[in-house]
Amino acid sequence: MIVEMFRKPTKWSVMKQLIFKDIDDLIIGSLGIVAFISFFVGGVVTIQTALNIDNPLIPKSLIGFATRQSIILEFAPTFMSIIMAGKVGSFITSSIGTMRVTEQIDALEVMGINSLNYLVFPKFIALMFYPFVISISMFLGIFGGMIACVYGGFASLDEYILGIQTQFDPFHVTYAFVKTIVFAFVLATIPSYHGYYMKGGALEVGKASTTSFVWTSVVIILLNYILTQMLLS
Amino acid sequence: MDQCGNHPFKLYTNPNAFKLMIEVKNLHKSFGNTEVLKGISTLFEKGKTNLIIGQSGSGKTVFIKCLLGLYNYEDGVISYDGKVFSELSEDQKRDLRSDIGMVFQGSALFDSMTIAENVMFPLKMFSNQSMSEMKDRVDFVLKRVDLIDAHDKMPSEASGGMQKRVAIARAIVNNPKYLFCDEPNSGLDPKTAIIIDNLIKEITEEYDITTVINSHDMNSVMEIGEKIVFLKNGLKAWEGSKETIFKTDNEVVTDFVYSSELMKKVRQMYIEEEQ
Image (tube, rainbow over all chains, first blue to last red):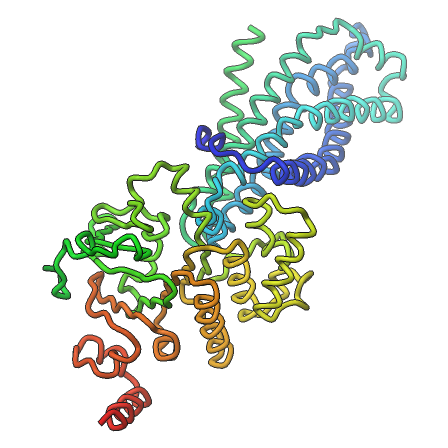
C-alpha cells in the first residue's frame, strides 16, 4: 500500500487542495479536543503529584518537575496519540471505508486515478504536522498544571516554574518528537489500510473503524516501548 | 466452439478487429471455488448501445468490473481497440481508463463535492483547461442532462434520478471513448428510467462512443438495446438485438424476457404485426 501510494501522483494543483483540506480536518480540527484534554490532564497530574508529597523534606518544586516529565515524556506524545487514534484514525477509516462501500474508490480507479495516492497521500502529509499538535499539548499540559498548582494552593508560581526548569534535558523533547513522528506515520497508514481494503456494507465500516482503533493503539503502545528502550535506556 | 456456437478464434481472425471497440474472449472469473464467469466471448461495437442482461447473480456486474479492470480474471482476453488489457502496465491501464466513463449502480458521486464539482472532477484531473473553460464545459454537460439549476446542490440533496444524471454528466464530461453503465435505472420510477435510457442512447450516438450497459430492466432492452448479450449462470446464453429478441425461440431468453403477462402480450402483438 505504501509503495503504491507514491506511484502515479495526482496533479499537484488538485493534491495541494487535498492536503490543505486534510490539514484542516485532521490537524486543525483536532486542536480543540487536544487543548481541552491536555489542559485538564496537566492539572490532574499536578494535583495528584502534590497530594502524594507529604514529606516536608521534599521541595514543592518537585510538583512542576514531575508534571513536566510526565507531560513531555509520556502524556503528550503517547496518550494523545491513543486519543488521536480514536478521533483521527476512526475518521480516516470511516471516510475511506464509506467511499469503498459506495463505489467512490472504484469511480476514482475507473477514471484512471491512483486512488491510494489520491486518498492516503494527503493524509500522510497532513499528519506530518502532527508534532505541531503535540507541541500545543505539551504547552497546555504544563500550563494547566501551573493553573491547578497555583490556584489549588499546592505551591507558589515561583516554585512551580523552578520545578519545570530543574534538570531540563533537551534530549527528552527530541525523544518525544521522534515518537510523535513515528506515531503520525502509524496514524496515517493503519486506519487508511483498514478503510481502503474493507469489504461489505455500512456495518463493516463501523467494524473496520473499531478494528483500526484497536490495531493503531496496539502498534503505538508497542512502538512506544521499543522507542523508549532504544532512545532512553 | 463456445456455448453459443461461436468459434473461439473468430474475434482474432475478424479482418475488422481493429475497427471494433471492445472484444472479450473466453473470459473466466472465480471467487474462491465459485466460478462466476465461465468463458464469455463477445464484442461491443462503436456507436452502439450494448446491453448485458440476465437475472440477478448471473455475473453481469462481475463481467463489467472485469471489463473495467476492477477485478482480475483468471483466463481470457479483453482488448480495447486491439490493445490487450492484461498486457498493459498499471500506468497504461490508468491512461486507458481516462478514456472511460462509468455510471455506477449507486451513482458513486463524491459526497464532499457539489454537483458541479463532481462533474468538473475529471476535467481537473486530466485536462489543462483554464477554470473558465472547465466551467463552460460543466455548464454544457449539465444543460445536456437537464440539470443546469442543480449546480451548487450537494449529492445528498439530489433525488435518485438527478444523481444518475449527474453521474452520466461526470462520465461524459471528458469526451470518453467508452461509456459503461451498471444498472443505470435501478431504483428509478418508470418515467425517469426512460429519460435516463434515452439520454444514454442519445449521448452514445452524439459522441459516437461504445456504450455497455448492465440491466435487467426489460423496458431498457426494448428501448435502446442495439446489441443484447444475455448471461445465465456465468455463460453467454444468447446474443442479438432488440428486434431479434422478439423472434428468438431460445427458451432461456424467453423464460427471462417474457416472464410477465404484459411482455408476453407485447411479444404476441409484435409477431402478429410482423406476419
